[in-house]
Length: 384
Image (cartoon, rainbow, N blue to C red; front, side):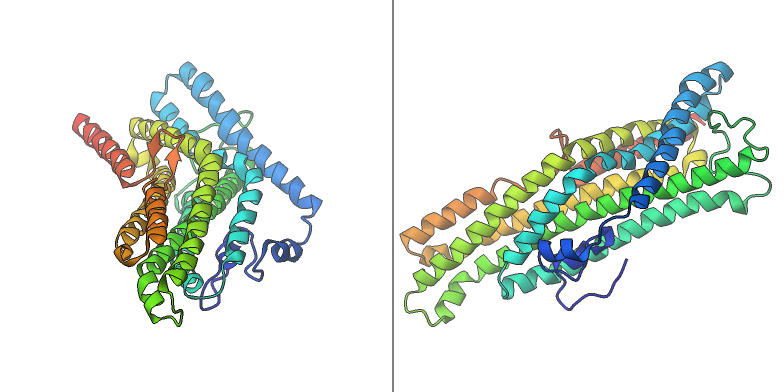
């Protein structure tokens, strides 16, 4: 992940951490920049996916619903079930990869269509913050994966990432060569799913962050429209205002449409993530926080970032609505007043993300999750 960018960051540069080059300004340049993906890459990905699903879906299902009922070890079942459900938060996002190319193309085209000037410069400055946000999230997720994998190396004796977990067909787990093979497969699977999920979530952070940056830039533009008209050389300020409002309407309408497309693509993944968080937290509390303390950050940080991104988008929409109302529209002619009224009505249709169209992704939903976690921890400590 490169950090070197131009002074005013452009969308292609921000998308670079998830595989989109910073050297192109249009979609066609980006497609030319990328070479064809070698077939060996697809083969490696197929092997990694097979290993991941064998361990963290098939083996965990067998362990929780077949092995543990035979042994009566409820604590082990809870710990491993929490591990499996938490990992599925990232795995769910793998199913939407094929749908991301079209969204990427539309956002890149939107960025390319924006004329150089104050609006584009304002968007670029905001994107620098968005890119840092995506990079920090991706880095934390990957570091968490390596910490989870490397923790057994600092413990005396032979240990796996999860000692109570038995992979189907690898008993006894702590004897050679089963131990070495199991350690390698589990380690590779954890890094793979964290890296993949982190990259897809970074994509969501960047494209929604681009819409956020655009809405904030539009807020500045419409706030200054009257002052710009008065300072311009145009003899009829309302003609200047009419042209400026027309551009604002076009950009705002396109951003609303793009966010709706993002919502449609990510709706199922976000809803599945919320469901996995609920089940994962319950299982983690049943298994004991001392046994699941490295699983909880992976689980909580993903849903926290989704809620944070959704809240920032809502805040930008509210800022735009406020700017429209305070744009000195009372000095405009009737035609421009009607245009401002249209923009105001559109701005009141709040832009945001939801989990399956049921729960809005914002700080309210995030606090509800945190309250549930705190309540569960408090009750578990009280029972002890």
